[in-house]
Image (cartoon, rainbow, N blue to C red; front, side, top):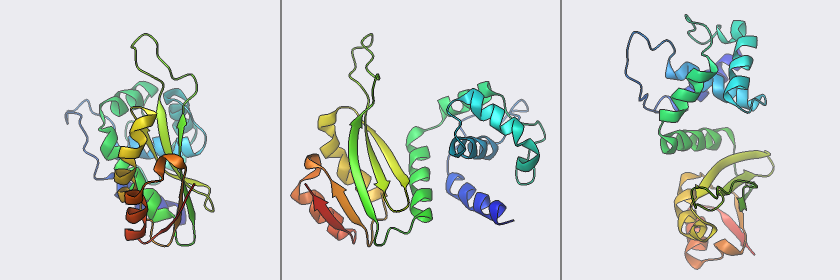
Length: 198
């Protein structure tokens, strides 16, 4: 029963995401069902749509206890199609709000660190490799948020916006040399946190 209330609580954070699909008799699965199965399967280690669908099929009886599944588990193609049309920004914001609610960040070290994803360079389209910044809550061992930037040099302009999304009250924020800016330090303090800037 505690699991069900935790899942219900999780669903409230994602309920604000607009379902871009046309509501049609052929729409067999609710957005809540698709998001919930995807999140739970990913937490359990699923890494692609096929694995998410397989996990859902293996856990169908348990999922039916709290999800409306009249048509069963969505296919891997359905998961892929739905996520292809979702607004990634609203999905990211819902995820960050959920993580903020899960983790009490007082006395927590929140590390912001940028990384370039290995083998993400697509020479065909002329774009550079994918660069992401993670917000990592070290004591909870939890990724609070992950943000993609267009280029490593754009990290500094995006940091203030990302910091605003996080509830940092009582935390200690660490950022590498890229974030050593007076305005960023002021913002961290204004949000009720301390900072360590290298």
